[in-house]
Length: 153
Image (cartoon, rainbow, N blue to C red; front, side):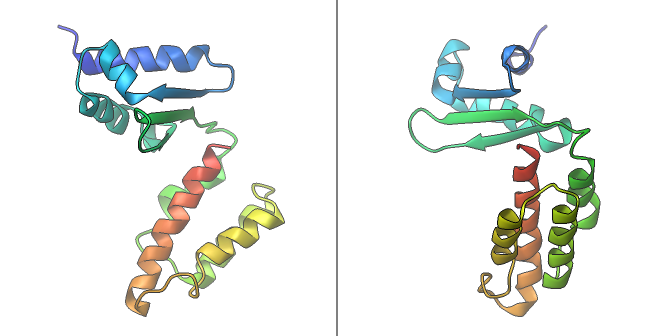
């Protein structure tokens, strides 16, 4: 027996395959209506079948029927960023280590000087207003989010 989750996943993958650039924008409520299910079923499929580990990046916007943007990542191009995401950036990241990562991304040509400056600003001690014991954990989360965003470009 075919599960609804499998059908929804196949539908989304077919739509992604027909898109020119590997990017797909959907309305969560419209998709739920199409499959006669609750929007939470769509959320389940997206959160379990379209993960970073599987090569997808999802942006979700609140309101307006739940606009969802699904992007297929180009893994070959982004091997270094994936390495950083899964190996180098752990649960904690010092400002010095974050700066080293940003320097390497810049040297590799993965980011330009402007993006590097924005990234440095986002992970600086000045930007992270938290007790020093928590700063490195917060910084790691911010860096991981930025790396995921880089994979979508």
